[in-house]
Length: 80
Image (cartoon, rainbow, N blue to C red; front, side, top):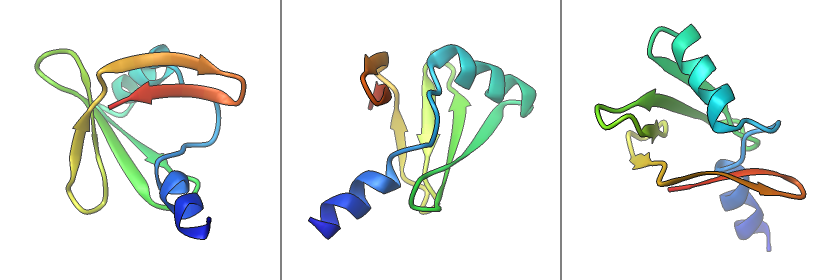
């Protein structure tokens, strides 16, 4: 269970950051927003040329948000 908790914490950002809020953060950041995960790592969000949000982790791995704002009882999920 510890490995699963660590994996999930690496992908979770505290607070309910929906697509609108994330867009505002990217705009305020001059084209990017740095998000701290619960595990303490950093995800960098940018808007790609296709207007989709791209997330890059500290290792340079990149994912595109395909489904945004899936609201759950404990927060907002963005599917990559």
